[in-house]
Image 1 (cartoon, helix red, strand yellow):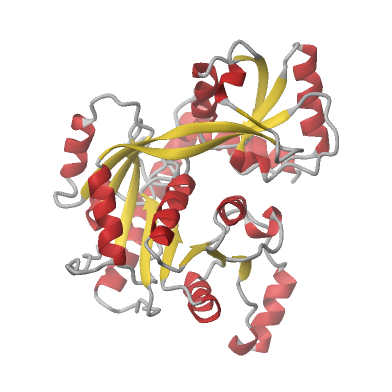
Image 2: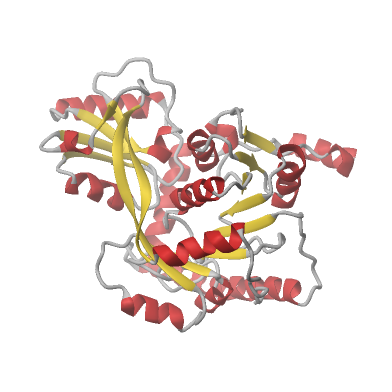
Length: 398
């Protein structure tokens, strides 16, 4: 099946799950997915029970492990929170490593994996090292979008990618002397013992559409929020979130909480890293956008609030890997609409093909996380990680 057909199929599936598709076919499919969701729920809780009762063993690597994850799939803003935490831990003198699975990266072929299996465990391929803290290796296709972006933005931090994050963690501790490991998107990776679970919750849809996968967007039922040591509410706009926090307290009475939002910083030219534009550049300018993220409306809304007139929007599925033709077509169409520039996200920018010269300037929007409330609670987490005077009670596995 072609990439275009796969993208259309993925988009159709999301439209069905989120109720955007109507009609008999969509209703029948949702009914079938309901049954699969109940099975998935049983499997998830059963797996957690195996670890809780020590039937399956977890691993301790001799380093402090902090997990950053969520109960739902996609779009809660994990990457900028991982970056923010890594910077703070660095400032406190920690040698930080980030462990990621490298979602949708190019993986070894089936033939290569079989060959390694036949050779035995001692010939297992090493994890993909995106950065050793001093230099970067590889490319976004083989590293994954988020790991490559984190490695680029975090000098001094090792970034190691592997589906087996126990193996990746051992590598980071042994070869790069990391004493603190951040498990990116790690709430469900209970195979690796951790000290803190920081759980991100989207303030606009705390539990997605309230259905488990594949009928919905929940990876775990809401009651599993009790594993959280700290709850970070994302996509906040400064309004009162007391009702949402009260809802979360039904499932976790003790976790500290913070509220944050993505704060745009500047525009960065894709062809010229020295060319950055202040946000005021967007005032009353016509712009085209191109994005392949879980929630493009949030990105486009930021640009509109900054004063841009969006004359063209191109949306692709999450983690879409762009072709030259797709980028050139977008730029040409934006130029026909008298746009002054084309803007994408930082995560999308690492998936662009190499550009030499473009008809319009192409920028990505650099964003960081801003803590609106609960800053003291977040700093207390950092303090307990770096200066563990008071020991945090062990987490309860579900």
